[in-house]
Image (cartoon, rainbow, N blue to C red; front, top):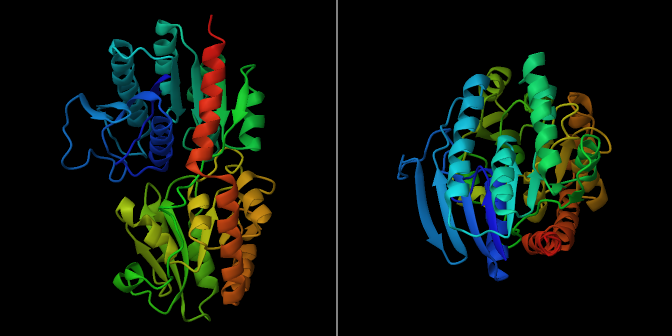
Length: 407
């Protein structure tokens, strides 16, 4: 089967969605399929094209499974919504031109959102060839942007919702990550949906010792470390960690760590100013992420109220894979909290409230045996349910079914 893929990130870009698509493509390639990936030049970490990459509009390279065409992403400041929208439009246009002008005779077109605009490009490319179009939703847009206050203009919200409905209706199947996201999408379109969760590479994210070179480098040896690792943006209520640290000065060997960066990092700096038990550490190279995750005694995933219904952070599976417990500060009954409870790998507490988080932190920090047991159960869960091969097999089955239905 020949599969054309449109996505915003691909390795070596460090975005979680890039890691997802890279693993899917490589597994599909290993199954014997040929792929053409249309993506952006690496830019995610600093929101600028990474050093060593050409600034040409399109740059291509061959892989054993096919070809990658990287187009200019027109990177901008994430807080400048108008500029970001123009950047998405520019990237999408370049991706569309690359897709329709390619000699790759695709049997199916597979695209990812965000950005939602890539769905338009994928639909045009699929329609031109008379093949099915599958649209994968990593975050439900514009719901997430509305909930976080990123988009407030009624006219912009109306336009975004019309774009969302248009793309859903043009897809042959919309794939989502969870039952909550599935219910959300079903309420907006008659297009069939399919739940295919994200996953974790259990070989890359394998259990390693707690005390490691990351702890040595950043003065964490001998500490009980509470960590948030990842993007610090509008969706994450990272200020809860600063509030929790302020509530727990009695635990002198506990250090709260935010490892990452993003549009809200300066607000976190302001909230944590003067706290001796709080550190902000910048993004580490992608190959070091397993070591970073292993350096924590407890991880925290805090999503603002209303956001866990529309998003499933892939970091959850990585944390469980390295055998570390999780405190999920999320809406009750949503995927992240459900997984933590189902796997018995941590605690789920209400979002945006510090007291329940502090209570859960004290419970886990008080018992090394409890943390180890939770970590073991989390690893068992990911090994059973969320591996890249399992997800790729489900996509292969979906693609095979759709291409068989084409007259």
